[in-house]
Image (cartoon, rainbow, N blue to C red; front, top):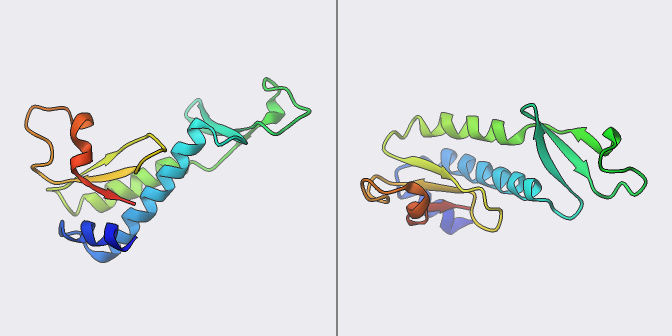
Length: 130
């Protein structure tokens, strides 16, 4: 953790914001894990609202509404907090990577992505927040 925070601090981001970015990254990473399924169930959006499917409900069929329950939308809240923090640092760009096997949040500096290139191919040049 300490190395990640130190790397983020080298970009000029304040300590409190760096800690908040780390929490956002952890929240997004867990959300991405749940979107893919964690063995117990998964999150799916229906009409823009997140629902959790409980795969361990042995006596309930998947199409039974009782197998689904509404869950708090932690992704939207984390993305709003991210936008609020990053508004203070206009030279830096956040990149959210949705694969749960890696870091969920990268901070990109102005020269991390070559001009005219797709950020999806170069985001790992940025600073991972983990």
